[in-house]
Length: 337
Image (cartoon, rainbow, N blue to C red):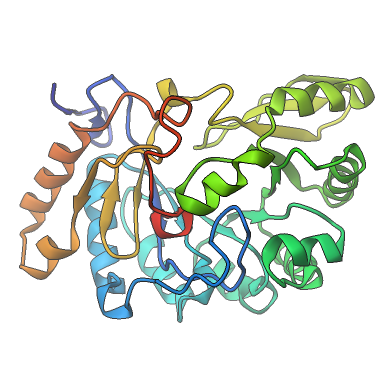
């Protein structure tokens, strides 16, 4: 089977072999991170990509332009931790100026957000996702390998003051997480008008597989919360896979991202570009296209688009986390979250 290029009213549409429109690029600007969350990076890990192998801002802009001309309208900057990439706001300005890119967002741990929020907003970021697994500072330090919770909270408050909206808080749920922990994060998000999203752990690389003992089906969490908060189906839209519920008689939305218990492969609309220029077609598979060698060999814009089209033709139907939990050896931070 091959990918199909349709021509709707305003742009081309990139369709994979299973009829899914690919309109969302998750773009990793670095594999480095200033935290060491135990489910993401192994303790003491230092085997990051050398900066000479990172795509330059000009190379990133060129690839995103190609995707934009193929109908991709959503771009999310990820890492690692994207805010450790120097001059990130300059890259944001370059991407936000590209035709066809209508939704530019950011995933971050927010430890550096207080200092950069204003510049990122001015450059074109409007939506952010922030990782926050607990509001207990000691537990936060344990999960993140020494991170400081207050830095994250300061970053969130700065983002709110600057005008980012929506601000989504992502909480990775673990078997040992207590109902009081859910409640504290939920109440904090309600008080600050943040959207809360729960995420299942995934067996990505050695760190993810080591954390698999902490896996908890999010349906259990939803049932616990429903007993206290009366959840009804929500309607929040976005480019990602979350299923939303609303606390009855409020506007507060809670998302559940369930790659293991209830996979969302049938509606997958995204691909990932790592910092070294590797295009990954599925988070849970190894199908990929190496773009950096092509870019540095002087590939034309037309041929670059054709390479992308041919890669989408190989996008798999689904991941196999349940059937083959050890299949993906690369770490989440090296893939692009």
